[in-house]
Length: 313
Image (cartoon, rainbow, N blue to C red):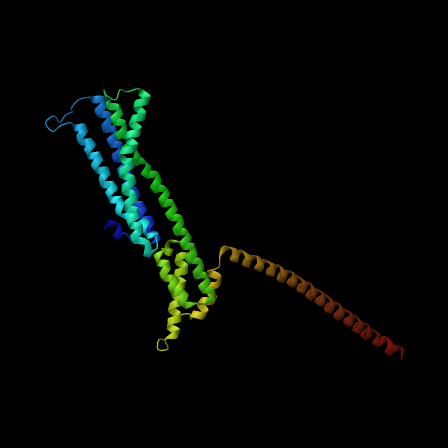
């Protein structure tokens, strides 16, 4: 129920959250395994009954406590892990997959559980040349210690599982985001509504660009429905304007880089054209001033020669 309250494991974000919770539970199992190993070593070294003589051996009590804690952690992880395994199978095959998973888990667990510690103990006895009839405390403790040590393997497995689940979640978020951009380009409101619903299942709002895209999609859907309903007055921008403005806002990084490059080329062309026009304007201004000065000089000469001509006359 704790995992169900956190969203369950039916969606990719739920799988990540569930694996994180189970990873914390595996830490408890690993600490219990370390505690059990310490109790084994303490019992072999001390060779006494401890302080709880009327209650029995205190090392044995603590050892049983470690074992029970490991069992509790294991049983807490089994339902969620089984559910995650079944979720990756198609719906029509989940009954068979659930039975197969349970069968293999029991067969492998009950087979290798006693077998592997026994092989470890026999190998240790052969290496140390221990007499099987005489027995040895260290040999038995190594077998149980191997079982305790196996709990540390979960830490590595859960870290890999969480990393894999994150990659799957990021891939699905990127796919939904790309489909949203395509729906904006095509101005397809029906696809937008479906993709917004799917975006919630992959928690697209937590993505770097997801919150803005989902917000724009909801705004465009709302504007479209307002336009479709003639009785409701339009408030703000219409759907067509929102779609046109969203094309630049929702462009990918490569598209934005190409757009900036095109704008730089266009700006360079316009800058060269502007300089050419300024040069032509300056040349035209110089020509006009020169022409006006020449006309004034000619007029002055005509005006200055008039008295002389009159005197001659």
